[in-house]
Length: 249
Ligand code: HEC
Image (cartoon, rainbow, N blue to C red; front, side, top):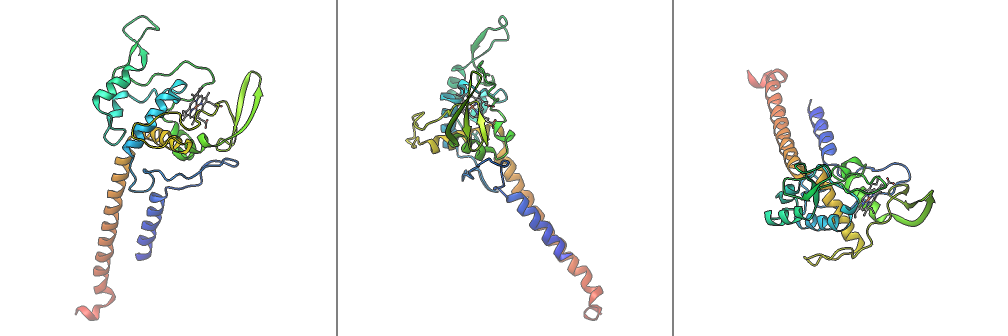
């Protein structure tokens, strides 16, 4: 009995806290980056999410939409935490479909709108859930952005680029080189830094409730440990009389 409670707890803890895992298939090289939201008590770094959004806006949004992410969520406290005024200004930078006008009409975005999908070739995947749709999540995106080998090949009229995280050739030229943006907070804009920032932002986009989920997890673990301890002591007390009747006559 004692052993089984202990082992159940141990297995549970290991399963719950394992932040690092073997990501990617054969031939994929994924770096395990030390994100602020890794681990049981991890949380998003608001300044990093704001920087990551800047990278999205300046570079990725040219090809990748985020149709499940509403502009207003950029104000989330556990997310980027932009002010309402900033969110209004960001939304107004995008042209969204105007459902009240003629088909094809657009108007500047409002906070309640969702990020539009740009009309480009090559089928860039929507970024709303991308970080969760790939093994390795944010680590995978980070590794992909740093994983270009410089090898290219032509396939018909498309150029494909070799990438060690992708584990082959993909139809996206390296989108980042470092110094792609200028950060207002003075953070360096090395390729590693901008890649980490956009990867963190995309993780938030895919899982905005990550922090709340982890907090709930920690609470239920705490309760489970408390409850298991209680069961163990109760168990000892109940059986003490039966196993050692001489002490209780
Ligand atoms: C010029 C257009 C363009 C830009 C800009 C661009 N991408 Fe892409 N991206 C693509 C296309 C096209 C694909 C699909 C490639 C394929 O499937 O071969 C893609 C695919 C991806 C994938 C999925 C790879 C996979 O595992 O299937 C990720 C992740 C990604 N892009 C991240 C980014 C990030 C982050 C940025 C901004 C820093 C960015 N992209 C900017 C065009 C672009």
